[in-house]
Every structure is written in structure tokens, then in C-alpha cells.
Image (tube, rainbow, N blue to C red; front, side, top):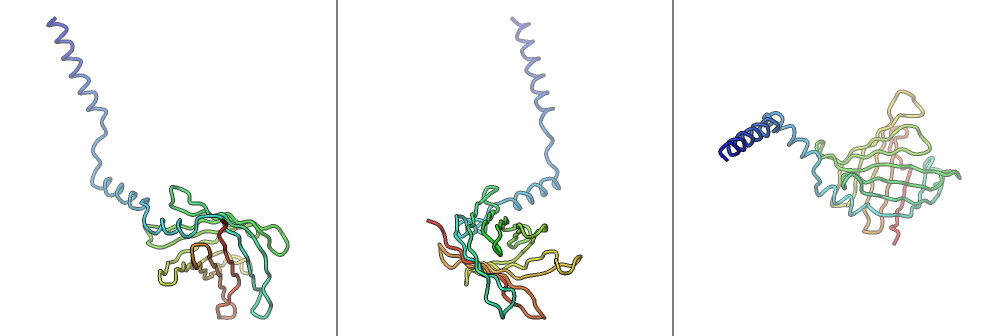
Length: 199
């Protein structure tokens, strides 16, 4: 009996030592700071919640596109599905419609970057091979997101073109998106998209 008891004590001590040996070492202060920084970067906040509440859903669209300020806009229609992804950290836009009589589709992302402290967005579609990247802010007084977009300039290879983009939340069922370009040193509107939520 004493032998069995002694054997049990030895085995228990061995398991305790093995368990302690298998435990990972405590993180250093630098590692703790890094983990906390990544946790803050990934944390969902009111900005992400607002994006989902305002933008998520399926929308019918009406587009007006201007070639210049002297020509009436070209009109077209489409449909856009806005889906929260990655646990609500981004909103994905999937658009289908027509452009100059041809089928057109595009996809983009919009979210809030906790680290940078501003909203970010991307867009690409069937008329380009590049990606538009934007960043900007939200004005609660006008319920408007304003982003500065950058893309490769098709007219000047090797250079970047910049545009201003606004997305106004008119009410729970209507959005208005507009894009502005620079022509001869002045800003001109080139696109307006009116969104109506499908019910």
C-alpha cells in the first residue's frame, strides 16, 4: 500500500512539473503592448455600427453621369447589395447595372480604421483594372461621408488622379452618392447615384 501511495505521489509530482513546463512563458511588456494595440485595432466601435445601420441592405439605384457641364447627363439604373462582413468591420458593396449600354458591375469596401482614425474605402469595377482607394470623415450634422479618392490616371500613366466623393444618408431608405473631379482647376460633378432601399 505504501509503495502504491509513493508511486502515486511521484506520478503526481511528475505531472505537475510537466504541466508547468508546457505552460507558455508570460508575455513581455513589449508583447503585451503589441497584443493590446492589435486588440484596439480590431475592436468594433460606434463608427462600424453606424455604417451597418445606415448602409446595409439591398438598394435600387439611378445613376446620372456627366461628361461635361454643358451636356445633359447619361442616365442608367442598377442594383446594389451592401453586406456587413468580417464581423461588421467592413461593408461590402456589390453593384450591377449598365454603363453606356453595356453590362456593368463593381465591388467595393467601406469601413472605419481605428488606427488611422478615419473612414476608408475601396472600389473597382468592370471598366478598370486598378483600385480606387479613399479615406475621409463623417459629418453628423449633414449625415454625410466625405472621402478623398485616389486612383491611377488613365489619361496620364504613372500619375495619380484625385476625386472627392460624398455619400449622404438622406433617411433610412435613401442615399445620395456624388463624385467630383478637377477640370481646368475647378471642381465639377461627374456622377450622382440615388439609392432607394428595397423593402
